[in-house]
Every structure is written in structure tokens, then in C-alpha cells.
Image 1 (tube, rainbow, N blue to C red):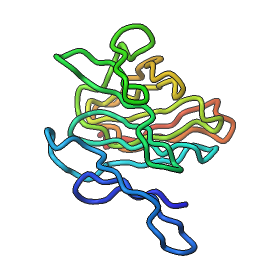
Image 2: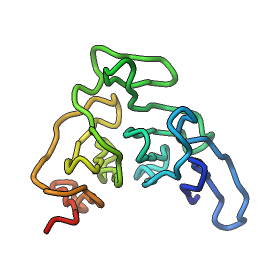
Image 3: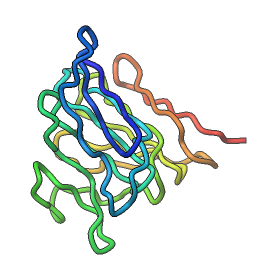
Length: 164
């Protein structure tokens, strides 16, 4: 299977051997515009597709088989939380930190337990991919983070930026 981030804010899953489109979802709310996703990643076990966007600055996990929403970070009335299977959880177990500008990059850890996101706010945030909780923020870049990648054993995380 091949996950694609397309124009108009869509994420599409395609069978790479037949070219058949399995599903297409609208990745970004029309309230925030329909920019194409700035990053798409498949979980190591193939169960989830993650997407990130520049507007708004959130990530979304989709069920790879059906395209159904599994979990997403969200902001409501200025408060960050997560939406798990369509139900808002804006208190316990939800992100306590979030990116303050659009997202450029994401990567799953090799075990699939963590999701790293890199944003225009010059930070990398490591999320628990099972609960949606932000575990910590890494700072140190002077410009937006354009790429993130875990080492094969998951012990290290690399990030790339346009730092001078």
C-alpha cells in the first residue's frame, strides 16, 4: 500500500500493484484551508497512516485499512487536546504541549509506539502514538524543522533544519 498526501488537503491510500485507490480522506478542515499535507508516514506495522499539515498545526492518525479517523491532535478555544476515534479528550491523557506553527515532518519510531513531529516553530515533539499524549519537546534549532528520522533501533532521533 502507498499513502499519498495530495492537493486540497487529501490523504489517499493506493494499492501500489494495481493502482486501485482504496480510500481518500480530507486531511485538513475546510475552516483552515485545504493545503496539501506537508508530511505523510506509515506506521511500521502498517495499521496507521499519519499526516501533518501547515494549516492548522496538527497531526492525524488514520486507520490504514479503512481511512477512518483513529486519533488527531486538535485545538478548541485555545486549548490543545486530542480526539480519539472521534471523541474529544481535552483533559487527562492528552497533549500538554503542541507546536505553535505549521508542521513539516513526521516519523514513526521503529516499534510504532512514538510519533515525532517537526514544525516551523523550530521544535520537535515526541508523542505517544497509542494515547496521543505529548511526551516532550526538543528545542535547539534556530529555524523550522524540515525532517525527522529515528535510528533503526529507535534509540536516537535525528532532525534537520535550515539552521545557519
